[in-house]
Length: 199
Image 1 (cartoon, rainbow, N blue to C red):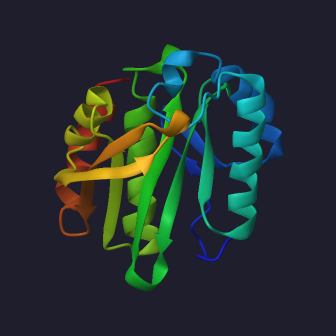
Image 2: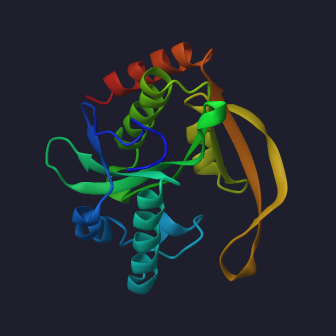
């Protein structure tokens, strides 16, 4: 699957397992998505059944076409599907990509699932795939997401004003962050320390 060989691989951590997203994850993701707070800063209202259906269909189509590499996030201990993340804005010719469209059910917030999910995706991107840059963007008003990115730490690169139109025609300013291959060893050490504190 996809136009970047080796990008979509099963990634196993101590807290979570990331699996290339497929039809078999639909029921688990639908259950995990059933909280409006998850979708506050995202372009769709995925807790609504029709919006979830459209989101899931578009996600599978993007994966099939090789435009993105989405993952389902499972708790390793129980197998429960608790969220999703993806590689997107793929630029293999420049050894760069974005990690985004990440959400987890509130029951696992601040319990290490997001930290380890980011760690697994970053490690795979830098150490297996050979990226030299991984970037992130979020709504400039999303303080929780920005704090999480700064805690990786990813470097803040600025605000793109009027960057996107999101649902209902709302204009969004986007905050951009990035990690480069030279920065990865220090980021890796920080994330491994944080993950060890969650177990």
